Amino acid sequence: MTQPLASFSGLASGLDTSSLIAQLVEVESLPIVRMEDQKADYESMSRRITDIAGEVENTRTEIKKLETEDDILTYTGTSSDSTKVGVTATSLAVPGQYTVQVSALAAAQSNVSDGFSDADTVGLFGTGDLAIQVGTDTAVTISIDGTDTLNTVASKINDSDARAIASVIFDGSTYRLQVVGEDTGVANTVSYTEGGSLAFDFEGTSGGLSNQLVAAVDAAFSVNGLAMTRSSNAVDSAIPGFRLNLSDTTTSAVTISVAQDTSALSGNVQGFVDKFNFMMDLIDQELLFDGTVRLGDSLRGDSALRSTQEQFRLLIVSQVNGLSGEYDTFAQLGVSIDQTGTLTFDSAMLSTALTDDPDSVVEFFTGNDTADGFVSLFDSLTDTYTNADNGVLTARTDGLADRVTDLDDQIARTQTRIDAYEARLRRQYTNLETTVSSLQSQGDQLLAALGSVS
Image 1 (cartoon, helix red, strand yellow):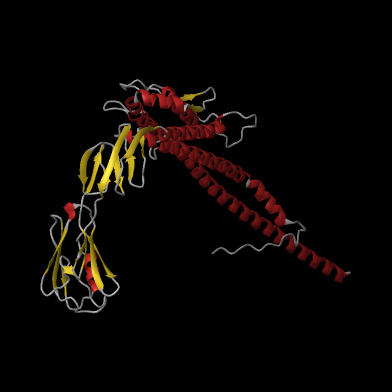
Image 2 (cartoon, rainbow, N blue to C red):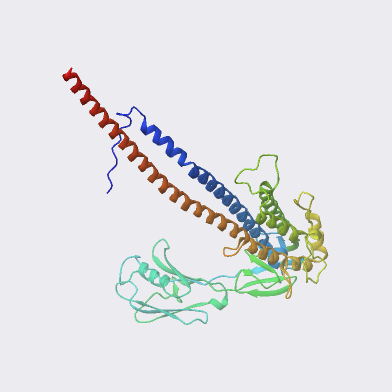
């Protein structure tokens, strides 16, 4: 290991050699200062381009909210009595009115065992195999031995593949094992087979009452007077495009009304317009001349940013080729661009288009078998600029990163040269101080000798 040179700092020569060396090294380090400033400029440019690329991605996220028919054609269903019949609608719904009456709700079968004195005592109900069959499913067999209690049997049922839920209930005098089917409807009737000495008697009677508390039954209802049944209270296919949620029987008809809902589509289009404008504002801040002196990290005139802005604005105003419907430009659906490049949205135009030709509106966004729609075109253009492998903006930030790496290498090499230069200066000034000190010592000796001769 090299030992540090001793520094006399002018003890002999009277020179402030430490300060002198520091100033010389500072002058020699000026190239590093310039390179550090340039590096900071490149890093600043890279951060801002990355922010813009992020906003391009955010804008893509907004437009992809409109990439399917279900995203565009949305409907709202209302019920005159939602406490009895609720309704939700999909893009397959047809606007209109329907009357629904409910005479019975679907129910899951519920059985209880005979009563026992305790829930945690073993040996109260015998041993053997309990087979539980739901509908036409294969029966599930549960083995019960002399160590089981009501609580452990309930756990065994719940841990099995049987589509039933077990619990222990207390009726005020005895404990019973209750088993409820997971699914409603007659098709999900539950049957029990008790082998060995088991004495739950799920299908028997207790105290004169049936141990089947609730029978598995189907929902019974009518739509516009047509009688129907379903195994579930969530009815998907009675009216195309609707789900009816039956929650109570009715004494009078419940009216279901369905209308097209343009608010969701308008909200998503407005969200896209807002994101697009924000993205363009970020680019404008970099490209537009604001009267200030152009600094080292300026992106004014940057070709990657200018291309991004021009191509996305061009897509907005361009015709979507290959469509068969009436609407093939965004302007026809209320999205236009002004002289400043800012998008504006007229939701009334979109509503009119949806009323006139909803299929054409869908086709504009989603395309058809032979042509891409606007969403797909925007998605592809976004990839052109932000793709991690070969995107235009990605390449720009990668290039800046390479420049930063090159500068780091140059700074390291320059710093090594400066360190060697400083070490050389210290050796030279140390030798100077040593020489001056030696001469002073010799002079002192000479003067002393002359004094003695005198």
